[in-house]
Every structure is written in C-alpha cells, then in structure tokens.
Amino acid sequence: MRRQALPLTEHEEGTPTMESLYDLSSRAVRRLYDARISTPPVLSLDTYFPDGHRFHAAWQDIRREALTIYREVHDLPRFHEIMPAQADISAADGKDWRMFLLKVYGQDLRSNQAQCPVLSKLIAESPDVLSATLSFLAPHKHIPKHTGPFRGILRYQLNLEAPLNGDGRPGAVLWLAGDEYRLANGEHLLWDDTYPHEVWNRSEQSRIALLLDVRRPEMPLDLRLLSRAVTAGVGMVARWRGFA
Image (cartoon, rainbow, N blue to C red; front, side, top):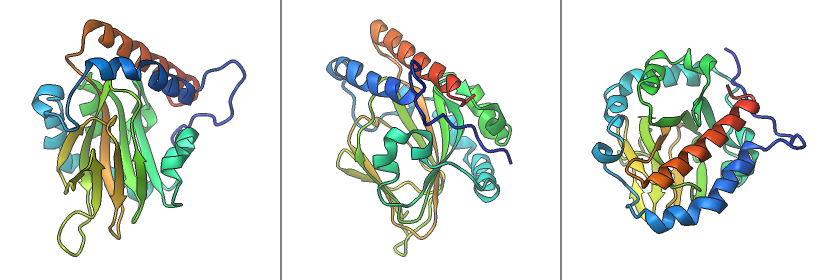
C-alpha cells in the first residue's frame, strides 16, 4: 500500500511550517478562548457533537477497517515524524505512537481515505470534523502529561481495539484533569484536550482508536471567525507540506 504523505521536516526559507502556525495559535489566541469559554473536561455528545453517535453506531465496521490498516500498512509514521515539534510527547520513551491520517485541518487525504470507505463516508457527512486519525498506541507506551493549544476544537475518541488487563479492565488509561478514563471496545468520549492529560497503555497489545478533532459549537461570533481563520491557515500549510 502507498505510504501516506508526510510534511517536510526541513524548514524552507520564507515558508511557514504547520508547527509554527500551530504554535502561533496556541500563544496568540489561547487566552482569548480561556477568558470566554468555560466548559468541563468531558462534554455532552448530544450538545457538542451529535454526529459522534453515527461514528459510534458504525464502530465495528470502522474497527475492521482499522485492523486491516494495522496488519497491512507496514510504514505507518510515528506522530513525531509527522510533527517533529511533538517529539517530547511522542518519542520520549522510545515506544511507538503511530498514525494513519485521513483528514488534516480540513484537507482530505484521498489515498488513505480510499482504504477506509466506511469511515471516510462518515467523515464526509460530518462537516464539523476538521481532522481524523487512526491512532495505534504500542504496548506500554506512555504519552506524557501535556495540554492542547486551541480551545476552538474538541477531541472525539472512539476506541476500536482496547486490550484488557488481567483484572478484566481496559489496559489503556486516559488521565484527564486528574480523572481516569478507561474506554473499552466501542466506547467513546468527547473531551477538551486543553485540560492536562496523559495516556498509558499498560497492556501487552496495541490500543487502536479513532481520534477526531471537531469544531466547537456555540461560540461567540468573533471566536467562531477566529477559529475558522486558524484552522484554515493550518490546513493550507498542511496542503503545502504534502498532506493532501
């Protein structure tokens, strides 16, 4: 199968990198959102992302597609190979956190989407989905505590392969704002990644999850316009850097 396109890691003079715009959005607008948006770490799917129920209803079909990718695509990139600036959370322990990208800030990766027709159809029918990734977390992988930069988006997580520990509980744990979340196969969660969070896969098998970045609804008009500008800018750079 074709290797998915990656952004260039070398900085071309005069050309903004995706990482630079991503960091800029973090520094420039974080305080604006924090001052005017106050929501808990975990949010109601019905209120903030009702399309999540459609992904959940199709989770077994999505799981079959994800397992095929896991078995047949042998050169899946690690997160820090896609975004070198994230090496501190992706490469810290030498264990793999690999990704199969289907959409990046509004830019569709057509060759990858062709390999996941059920999932890609759902993405196409969900206009609030800005980015979509199949995430493959190696056994005993630890993603250190960190915070996302941008409160204009929310994270939807649907676990597709969640190995159990000897006690019968899912071995992969999301620690979010001090609380523990263990999602089993087919369980999902909508959460705000600007709260401190970390992930442990304390099992002997890879955890596979669908991760969606979705547009936050019900924001003031100026923040909606700002969010559109930020996501459009990052998406444009993603196209320049060879994603789509």
